[in-house]
Length: 170
Image (tube, rainbow, N blue to C red; front, top):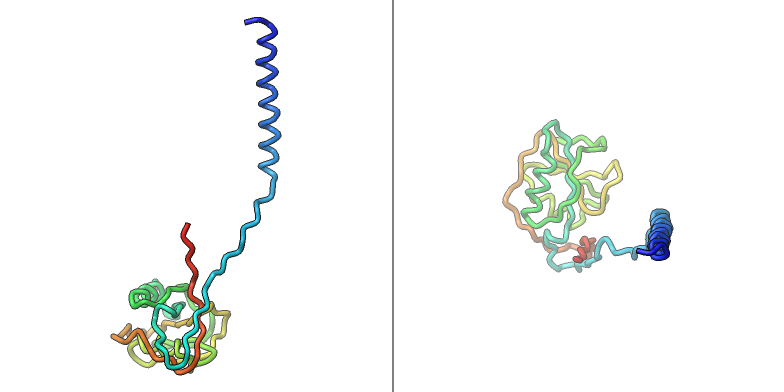
């Protein structure tokens, strides 16, 4: 090869190196492209007298006992009945629980009735004393008696708006 061609090859390689370095630095320090916000849930309305089914109710389960994993097991069993599974954690509040307590600002909510009828024994209702997730929150106590055979549908005693998680497939 002649000297002129060698110099052109070295000059071309240096140009590619400089351009690649410049592009790499720009990509490393660029801001991400804005992503359009997607709705996290779809609001569904159930009118008074219509059927409210378990697949429209999000249930969050909190453990108030010393039994490890009970909140997760109860959540899974409720999901098997068609309920939408929410969080499963230890009780962050101070409400005292024996068997089961359903936390709801409005104890006459049809969703509360539907969830409460799933449990054996006395089910108490109380106002939440901590920031709850959207849906119905349930506290499982040390005297938890289990789930009973119950209907997973109830007639709505009033109009209810529920937030059903939106799932977008790629």
